[in-house]
Structures are given as structure tokens and as C-alpha cells.
Image (cartoon, rainbow, N blue to C red; front, side, top):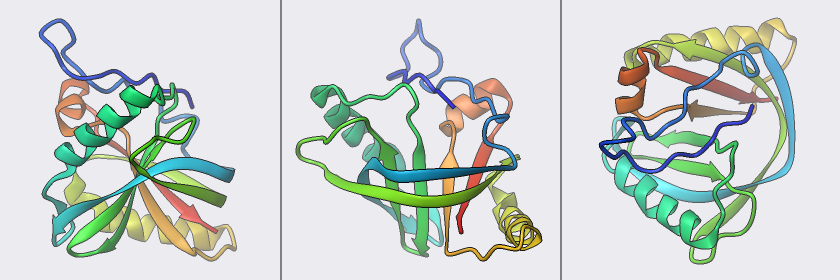
Length: 165
């Protein structure tokens, strides 16, 4: 599941996100034990993020300064409120000046592709997928694999749903 971190867009670098390979994630069960993440909060209006870009820029600057950019960076969102979401950015080590969190557990993963307007349908499909496996979902995370500009450039908007079971 490696992803190389590329920062930021320049005239010579028309994308900031590497292409995403859905195969290692789709219909998979993964287990994490104390996986380290930088944690922050995004303001939202009815789940529509208002300051996601600024939050990412601020945290990427902290990560670069700390030498904590991983080749397999994962950006998770816990959409726990209409007015905001907790964002988790995977890092290989502690980042000074940032709030840190560790995530452990077993997760069922499914990859979806399409516009964000389909997210309700994806959640329903994910809940059915978990139930089909005879499991019960404890929490749901959204892994946004690319920024909107890169998704448009690649012609694919992949979102991975991770259901903690």
C-alpha cells in the first residue's frame, strides 16, 4: 500500500498526490497496532469541509520540518459531526507541535470511485459489506486518497471506507 508523498504543486509538478492503486485496499481486512497519526480538526458545514486545504498545508509543513513524511501516507477522516471532522495523517514518528494519536484495530476496507455526492450510498454498501462478513461496525473512517485537483487530473476519485470491526 505504499504511496509516495509529493508536495506541493508547481509548474513542473502538476499533481501533489501520487496515483492511487485500489487493489491492495479493496475488499481487504487489515489490522493496525498503535499506528501513529498526526491528528487535527477540520471545520465543516453539513459534512462539507471548509478549511481542509489549510489544515493539510499546516500539518504537511510540520511533517516536512520534522522529517516525518512517510512513503505510505494515509489521510483518514472521522466524520463525527455535521460541523467538523477529525483528520488523521499517518506519520513514521512523533511530530513536534502537533497532536498525535494512535489507531489500533481490525478494519474491513472497500474502495469506491465517483463524486462525493455518492457517499451516502457508499456508506450503505459498506454497512452491508460488514454485515455480510458477519461483523459489527464500531467506527467508520474515510480515506481520501487524493485531493480534488489531483482526482480531476487522474480522472478517478477514489475513497476507501475503513470499518473498524
